[in-house]
Length: 109
Image 1 (cartoon, rainbow, N blue to C red):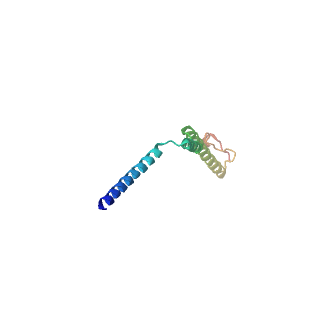
Image 2: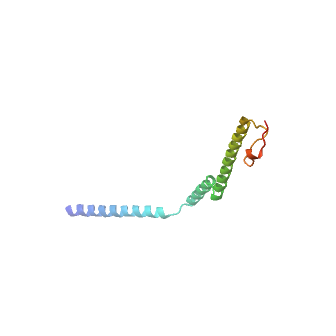
Image 3: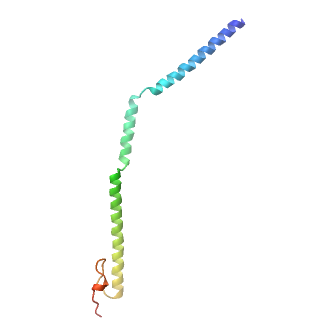
């Protein structure tokens, strides 16, 4: 009876070992098989990413536009300051701009 018991245990152990090897091999093969929908899903994700991503040229264009607007705002503040200075000093008829300063304006009191 002892030999039969050992034979059954050895057979059970062998079958269990090969069953585990088959399971591991099946998982490896399933991992290698290409999914029909996987490529489609990846393409859909790429298409959605490109909508939100700006190209380098577009980023440069937006940066140039923002810089231009900032320069325009700074020029507007500078011109307002110069106008207020001229108005406060009493030469309201001779408004200085960026290109024409107080030097070219005759003030008669």
